[in-house]
Image 1 (spheres, rainbow, N blue to C red):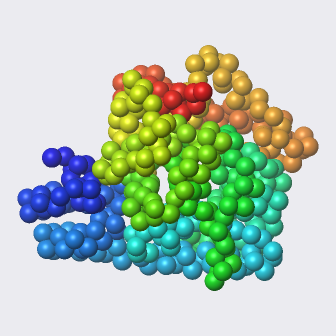
Image 2: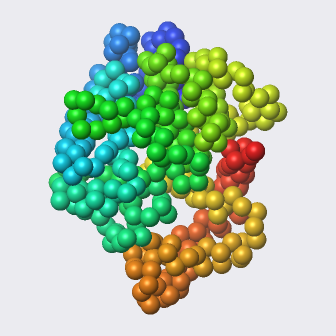
Image 3: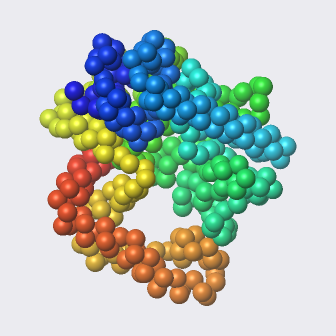
Length: 398
């Protein structure tokens, strides 16, 4: 049995009968794979929960335990920091919603340390983004990009990442969840739940699930780790009975997220052996390539390696278009002055802005030229790009 299949069984979707047969070398392989997929803390917790740690060697057990402890302390620090930020925002009259991981560790997973957190994502009303940014500066956060008024416009769903040099925490202030989907941001705020004991809000359970599905599919084109599918599985397992699936599907259709949501749910079912809710059966279509799409998404997940960041090249729509490459290149150079000023942190009325068109030529060549050569010549890259195009076409079809 492959390491991938063993890992999935050890995460709770199969029998633990195979545990006595796993030797030390296989445990080291499994832990390395779980590390790449950011699920080591949950692997340790589940093995302990089912009384299976006795089958793990002392060395591997210690690696699992230390990872679980580190994740727990790290998440405690991030949650404490989130509450500090939320309190500071509250004093300034700024509303805040905790997104993804910060919500999941506190509300969905049975222990605070089970879900790996990379950064702190928060949603702010778009009209208050600038005030929120100034507030975070006062809290000690810094940004390695010069922030101008263009950064507070809707060119990206969050302003440039900030970091706290002493706390080692990355913060993203979001005004939107995604740029190119029909999501009524006011509806999100109206649906959100208020935590009376603290000065922040969370998305309601239907919007949380939709956000996670959208993040995997439309935002990252399935170039994502197992941790994100585990999020979906944990919601279905621990809070599935709280979801109003009819309302969930109404919102998915309204926001044009049905294709991506359905595929994420099908992949989660394939990975963890869980049942798709009955309400989905009415929209499951007997498409000839549906099994292929599921396979592509799962393969991309197992290929994921955050350390290489090479997966970024597949996300860019520049590689998904059949438009002639020179026309595409010039179109990406001669963007609007407002967008150019956003990328290069200049006032849109500054005469220096025109010089940035020359800088943009250099930046585009530096960023994409080698990748484009690989995509045109490397068989593996050609295969991945072709599969990404198929997934992209499925997501955005009528």
